[in-house]
Length: 86
Picture 1 (cartoon, rainbow, N blue to C red):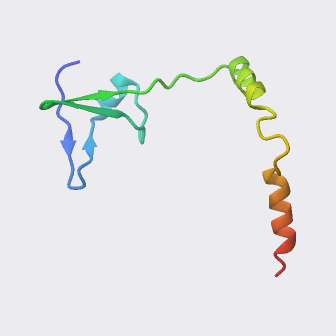
Picture 2 (tube, rainbow, N blue to C red):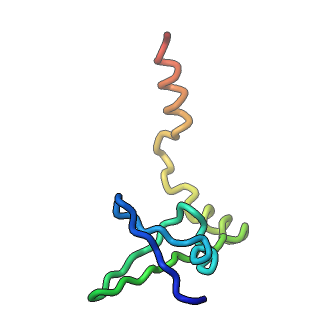
């Protein structure tokens, strides 16, 4: 890709051309890390890989029971809802 010009708007936001975003695989409204080195900046694009279903299930298994014995958010919701009478 040839050199592109980015725009720094009045709010201090750096606007990248859609071609640059596409080339880097950055969807609109994404966050990127900015590294300042002397008078240069580097944009580091986060790894946006999707977690496989198998990996998600493994992670959920590790987290399951982490808050055992604690009131559930569902219980708290219904308790608060029942307490708030209009």
